[in-house]
Image (tube, rainbow, N blue to C red; front, side, top):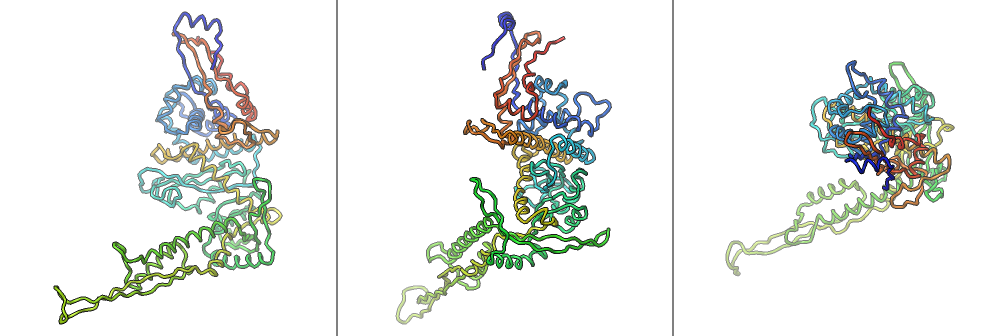
Length: 594
């Protein structure tokens, strides 16, 4: 970077020694400004208690600055904050207009902040206030809510009644975990309500408390709540129906559904042959419509008895076949069959050194059954085997044989598998039943058609992006806090970071689509590539290598400030996010000491 020095600075350079201070501003100024626009400092200060003797930064500003560091560096360690703040005091003070002290970010003070955030009475109020502001300020759509849960593995010691417990996990079943339950606003994936519970708890009991916490404006009649099969529990459906809200979720293959599903599939196959299934198409990446599903629906009446009395309502069961899902299941079956065939043939190897032979028919039968069960291909393979007997005559006793010596016959028995045949008819019948799933909804067809329901549910990945960002960009694991209240508080703090990324991404994409414009330069592999759907992560990366350089004389007086000039793309991003163009330029204003 070439810096043009004024005559006054050149004169100073010639007469005295200067101190050079360098701060990596990067995306920190952008993140701070975005959180200020979202009202984070005011809302946190409004709901987090402040001791009357407390000095220094408020809890709101402490959380905002810490969160800016976490989002920028992906590091939530409390111990790193003092060093970071010491090297960024000029930037942080200028952007926030606050007096920045290193002691405001000590380990004890940050632990106290997390303890406050962990308390439900504070956190629930903060979530509701942020939801109200975001929906009003950014005019967010509020027709669809998605609910889902995830787990976060930990390395903490498991204690009775603690937050970190062993439970069902897709990440690492050998490690204890905590569980997060989240309700998010569709389509942008904004977390509306988050609950942190111990890792052994089941998902079913977490839906109702989460839904009850939603902002009253989000509990309006006709709200569509989408969740996985665990949300299809009868009491959850009854709760939503009683409040005139709409639900959509798949039915699990348990209980009555497991008994009814074979009949539903048979009806679907018959309707398919008669050409009576409703077909669902979706545009491909290249603009061509592709068949993604086909199905039919049946209507039924649900009844429940609770404290308020007997209640019933009507719901639709959508029996849907996905060709791609069926094809994946078929390929998986072929793979299991091939693996089973290989292992079954290996049960009876040819005679040789170290080749164990099966000599009992019952033993062979058990070995074959074990392989078939392990690969879930029972009744799909037919195995033929033969009993082979080898007789050998030898003399009784030691020494050379003679015509007069007694002999005996040694009989060796082994079983040899001769043929493994696939039951083609059974396999074809089974494959024809692959790819079927049943969904349930109380929405009328005019509100949610079968096609709309299928396409809506396939956007379930949107809520998964919240969990992905927590585990990737924000690096929630491993957790560098040990106390339960700090684990909860840190998790809630990191969900605020997801809010920042989500709103930033939504605002930028909406602006680009409105102007039918694209942002170039966000893809390092192709600088000329433009996109109208930039991710927040790429936007933040676009602000890397923005540096503030400050010159001071030995008396501590500032002689000059220089900031890396912003590119046209960076300036365009700031403008589309509704941030002041002078956000970064203000850092170049000289500070004078009294």
